[in-house]
Length: 110
Image 1 (cartoon, rainbow, N blue to C red):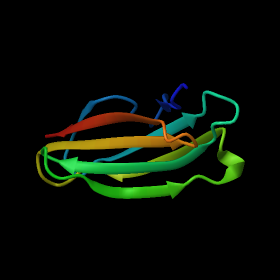
Image 2: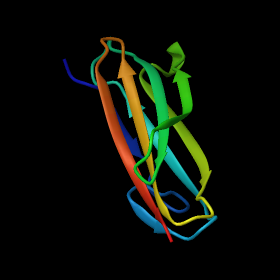
Image 3: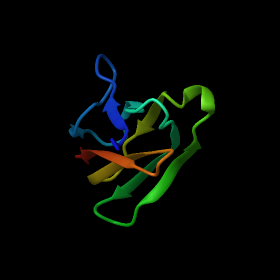
């Protein structure tokens, strides 16, 4: 059994890896989750954020519709806080078999 994949959208206006951004700055993270085996459709997609190493808070929890079971894409329009520190965004996809893939992006705000 092979877990699903998550990739970040690259290109103009997208943040696709760890970055340093200014206070109160708009940014966008695009995600592309894909199944890796024909019948193992994607089931859920969860996004959490934690600030300065603190507790994670869920900011999105999606039950993936059957029509997107093979590939799920979504853009997140975000804004950094007005205080310095780190913002860790965690993206988790689960497939039909319960296999999980997680990726993170850490934004350092200064």
